[in-house]
Length: 182
Picture 1 (tube, rainbow, N blue to C red):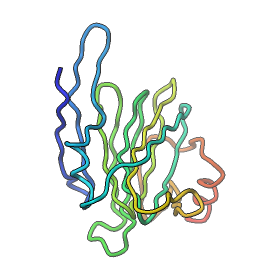
Picture 2: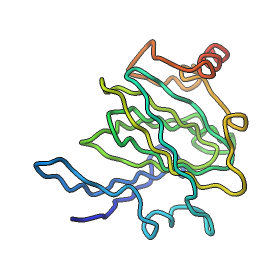
Picture 3: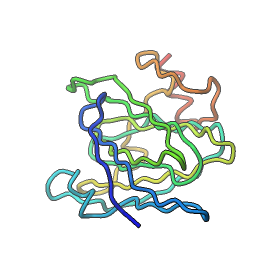
Picture 4: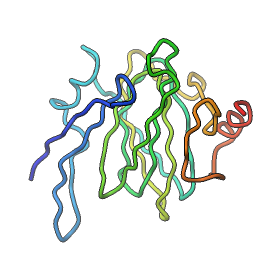
């Protein structure tokens, strides 16, 4: 059984990495490795390591995001179900400012996406039985939580993201950002 990764640079967003794990498939199901320090810590700035993991369980038709902060690196994936992962460049000094990239992540297409600080992170749950999302975080100092994050409306007209849904289930925070941006 292999635990290798293929690592590619996004062709759309500067600084975003796409990590594709090798998958061992058999009659019982499959197994794949989501992280190995020797392979993936090298994607972070010198001296920084992943220090914090989070899981988020969401029902079908839930859209979470667009959220981010100015200091955390996120390695994200879907460990159950199917999501439409969207990464938006919100760094005003970036050549790819306001561009976005979408990835469909599911059992047959496992991917891990490394998102640098200043980028917006969002996902939509398109699988009927919901999804489990995993974040691996790296940052200096204390963790930035909701009060220190930015939020951009999932339907912001400047971005024109073609989500696979018109009326998703969203949080109050995301509803307020959607109303403010349109």
